[in-house]
Each structure stands twice: as C-alpha cells, then as structure tokens.
Length: 185
Image 1 (spheres, rainbow, N blue to C red):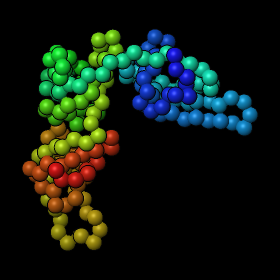
Image 2 (tube, rainbow, N blue to C red):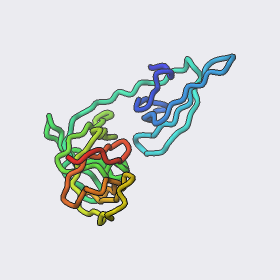
Image 3 (cartoon, rainbow, N blue to C red):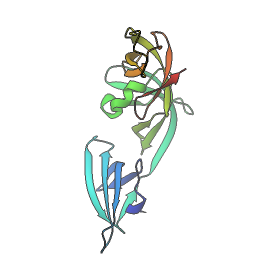
C-alpha cells in the first residue's frame, strides 16, 4: 500500500481492482482540516480517465508492474508488434492502447514496455526521437526578421513546425513529450 501523498505524475496504482496511471496531481491544503489530493488518472486497460479526490492519509494499492526494453518492429493495422531485447518474445499491443505515441514509433526504436501480470499495457517513449522529413513546405524568402517556421511531415506522418532551412530528406530530432522540433540530427 502507498500513501496518496506519493501519487505523482506517471505513478501507477490499483483502485477497485483496476490499474491506473496518474496523469495530473494536485495537492490542496485548506487553512483547517486535512489536505485534499486531487488526481486525474488513466485506466491502463480501458483507456478511460478518472478524476478522484483523496483525503491525506488515504492509501491505495501499489501496482505490481514489470518493465522490459523492447524494439519496435512493425504495425499490421490493428496491433503494434515489438520484440523483447532479453527473451526475444514478440508481444503485440492494440493501436488503441498506443494512442498518440504511434506518431513517434519508427522501426528499430528501443522503448520501455510495461507489463502487468504478463499482460503488455503501456509504452514509455524516449525523450527524443530522430525522424526523417519526407515532405516540407517551400520556404518563403525575405521574411527573416523573426524566426520563420514552416510545417514538415515526418516518416510516421507527424507534422512538426521547424525552421525554414529544413528540407525533405533531412533528419530532425523531435521531443516526444511535446511534439516540438529540437535540432537537425
């Protein structure tokens, strides 16, 4: 059991026999009385979100999770397939579970896969990913007094705002937390 004061963004816990991951955490301490902890969490099985308030001192069950480094292999339309780096097993995860993270999955990318009782549930992307630009808008010359940006499309279909000098065929580094351009790789 863990105290609800330890629930921070990214922490996994069990509540009513369901597994949740904290998305947002807010600690509110009024002038009198006990503190209130408000969280927004995602159910790792169904994908639904839950907003819940706890009173300081409440406890929730700690989730018994395993983490494996896996390599992304391919997408067959409905599932994303990975290969465990240690056992060479090939777990598949439904596209609904991957969600927006699919925009950052490029072949051979090493990620962390979360298992709950041998069931693959969630992925954790690296902070940055190098992606090839496949389509870039034509740069407009002359308007260089301010930082002029243009939109490009990467190999996974992700659209990113980049500086004017980036062209199709370039490899760029993208932040997976915000989807923003960092540098040319």
